[in-house]
Length: 191
Image (cartoon, rainbow, N blue to C red; front, side, top):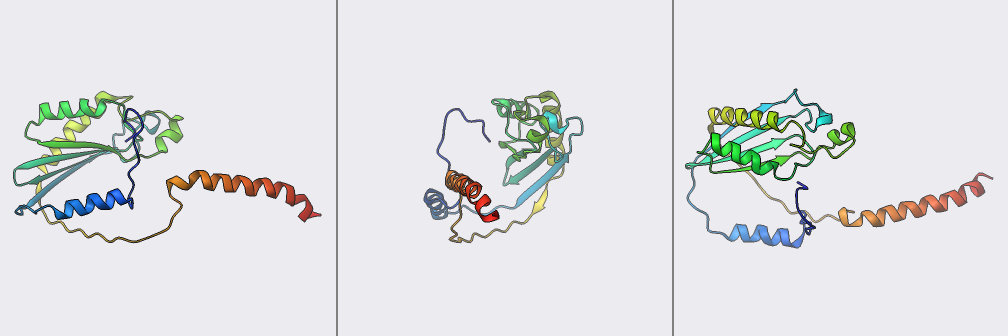
């Protein structure tokens, strides 16, 4: 999240391109089914306070195993991640657990850390050694926690009209106009 170099077009739920991608995925021939196993672990990481970039939800790890393939999901309660810290985490996890085939690191995008720290403190910019140490421990715990699970999902498309991110400027301009007119009319209405 926000670790990109340069500007990229935003791809949001409800965009035509998202619907096209979903339709393309649905048209893929489905492979044979395998049982799914999942293991989870959590550490609130009390050693790192919010002003240093980690919120109360700390680090959560989920590992899934389908057939013989292991996938690790690493979630950090922070707002953004220091550039290249993701790759550093992956390298360390791969060294310690070569059996993991794929992994992804995510942040919760909590802004509590920015409120307390004054902004700009990303996951890994402070106490990266503690975060890596905790991550490695949690991956091991999640692997030990693997058990068979069942999964269900459904998708429903609803057509809603909302303001959305592209209408922010329009909304701010409208509010500014209302406030300006109110300043002029308020004394007249009061009198």
